[in-house]
View: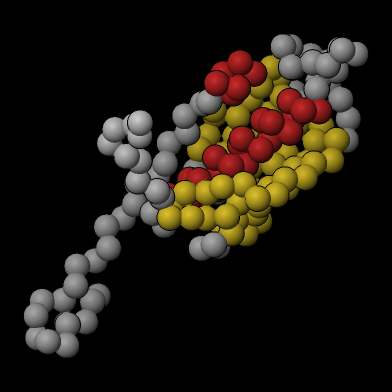
Length: 155
């Protein structure tokens, strides 16, 4: 409950709750075949086919794992940031590849390690259909105020 303003006027209004940001796939996500299964502050889950994302030896490309892991971790950070009226930008990502995959579907799950007002850190796990860990990523995002887009493009 707000306390009355010192000048005797009505109390300041409660801040409006911010709507959760909804994931929109980017061009690379679409080309990689990413599908969103869950999206919340607590957890973001997506899938991606191995087919179409393999390197020349027929294995899931490590760069594809990093790209999808960074996307899912960043989406999780932006969802959290949206609760604060902010957005998120990646500042660090690292990954460890544990095993490879030749086919099937991988599942990418981002869960928070730290949800702050300035920084977030998420663990992102990529697993195969048997639930085996293929890759572990850690991503840190900086939370920033949203910049307003100009109504018309600059010349």
